[in-house]
Image 1 (cartoon, helix red, strand yellow):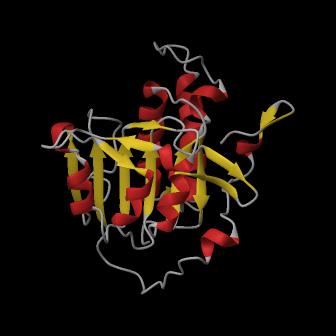
Image 2 (cartoon, helix red, strand yellow):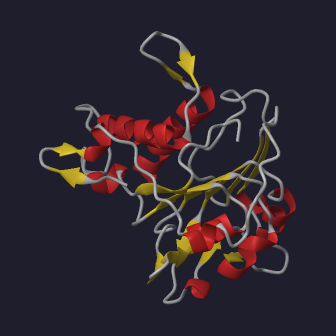
Length: 248
């Protein structure tokens, strides 16, 4: 999420993430069993979607790609449990109530293509990172305990951090941002000493947003998104633990 202040975006100076209320954090306590050596990843994109995590960026990862007609709710429920990183590039529908919200994947043999709000907990996640590359995936019903919606429900399912969007996202800008995010999150980043350092979710998203802003501002770029406007590169935010790293 881009926060504007004066002549400069706050993102130039700070990393930003949102913390869920205690009602979410402690209603289903999770135990961290330790660091695993292999990152198991699932990428679900019914329409091809934006570039997600790649084997070249994280060669020791076991990555399951479910794209096109294979990106069904049934395959999500089959692959997602126990996964440490989930990337969903799809459409989202936000209803008047949280229970009316859903993610729209590819239709299965029964014709059903929806991953409903109430079904998200059917696929338990083990302190995973979930990236919802979908329009308004971070919105929902405002309550005294925070916003109840799709992103928060993934925390109930066991995710430790969820990257989601506040408003309609541009395919062009999201494609750029997702690429920059995973390049940083999975490969790490160079420190001021020239060393490669591990990057957490908050640092990776901040870098991705700034890099996308700069890419959209390139004088020779040909695209529909207004150059450097926060509406293009600023809709995403983190719900949960922004200090999560690719060691998860």
